[in-house]
Image 1 (cartoon, one colour):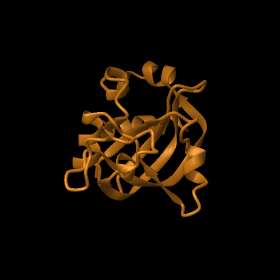
Image 2: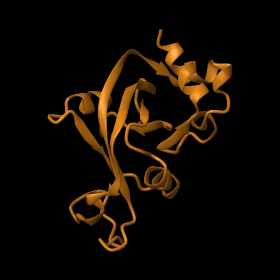
Image 3: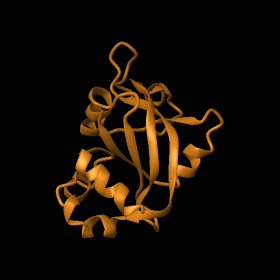
Image 4: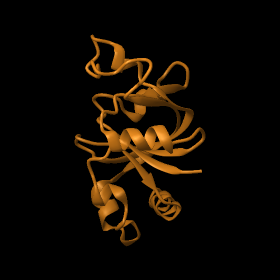
Length: 152
């Protein structure tokens, strides 16, 4: 099992949006960074837990937990000319972009702020704090447990 941190701008898709999905799960799509795409496509697996991180907003930080319910599959938005995620170079024989499905698990009563994460010595090597712009990031077992302890 792998642990992950997925970043989203809450005005695009928030933890509340995921929690409110009629089917109980939602598609994590729109990834257009090759490094994030490769992680999503090659390493993210069904049942992997995910920290849901809100970025580019007033309360930046980890808002809750989700779980992967469907492994990587071609992102349908890449083929839709009406989508902001359309990619004219993508084709069904050789997809360029992938997405996964997530299930809502838990919303934190108090999101764990970026400042709080930076203040925690055990998280100094976390990808979020080293390469902050990456939207799909691995989290180690120790980092996962440290962050969960911060929610108590």
